[in-house]
Length: 613
Image (cartoon, rainbow, N blue to C red; front, side, top):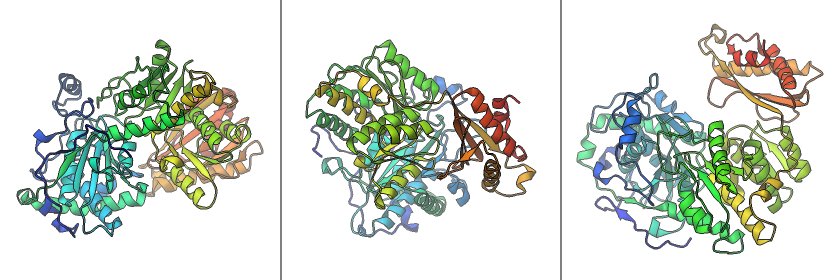
């Protein structure tokens, strides 16, 4: 990867070489590094990195009975409250960590304090050193990035202190995207201190402003559930050392080399290069195309100035590019109807060729064509499948469990590929695609209806920006081939996709305090509900259970289908129904209701309302 000129690596603190063969145990406190507030990250690449309290922020926050932007977390210099290991483990959200980082919302106490964050970062260092068994003689290097959340700066500093406790070389990227953080483990460019041994992204995706969390990466990709549990268990033990430290670690701390790097310029330059290559190495292959972007006030604003404009695209009408962790315009989520209406309106108002929308940390995306037709959920999967199957005929497309029957027909009958429907959860989908390749079944795309999409050619990283680059490649190459301009080339690629007239998701909650559970787990109760439904379906000639299914109970009938499954993390049974008419959808819902109505701990009110009982 070529170095970019004019990018300077800045040193914040007095440089000192990391000590060799450092043990990650009770010695953490000897390497404590206090970062002063005057060293907060300045704007990177012209984009705001939260380092002050603007009037707008304070006015908005006052509505929530808060007077400061940063979370009211216990600082490392104050008395540290006790946090049990079980509380650390509750922060796990699949392959991520998430918690409440900003005080002030009733019923949502702080769980992701600065001290907890320090312990988690040190826990990651311990986990990383255990994985990198051959690097004990050199200092580990870890990059840190964050999205636009108002707690980002506090947590970035806390992560830096936690890494410093472990003697790790800290590199701060400031405002960044999740995919860029993974890429920093692969980039070979010493000017930017790359590659790093590990990377931490501070984000909670599209969750409310008071939440935050962490995603972790090595060159092997994102960490899995067992890895997150390991890190949190280490963090719980380290937290006790911090609590007993009584600030002595800060007094005796060794200085640590902390750098600030504009890595987003490196990441964006790779996206630009990919589009130019697809167009035959034309400098501005998107010249004349009008493309608008909606970043939802998250971290995706860079895509306009660092990707589209260097490629020659017109970007007027792009909106919500400035980072604002209060998300004042709409939730940055391609699945959100308000968000999709916003980007659709922007496309139509500006008569643009294409609209692109990102979630907060840019690992998910969606698009809108010039007529206002949305490319998200099943339609985005269909479009990406069409692009990938042109490049890799016959390959397997791996999706999550709630994709439609019409999508299966489109992939297999129209495109000549194979549709492998797996479990919900982007990591589950990606891991399944990797597994299929390992046993000899070629798979090049793993994509979830939420907008998470990962390609084999891109190291199986769910990268919303790279997904959109694949669309831009198609636009650019079509023009080069003389196939016309605009987004029609994309729209034509999903022609023939059968889409249901009715598609709903109803969430049936399990009351964990209900006597029916008798002290048991909601998961066991949910499995009992699913077993009862399965037994009922087998006795009904009008219904057909899916012969191959990896999650919940999927059933066809009345020209449509339903899937009842247990949520990955919550006491909820989501019910997805698709049908050719509301009447047929109601028939399917009736069958589910009749099968599960005896489970009194299950809240079926949403289902009852849908069927009109």
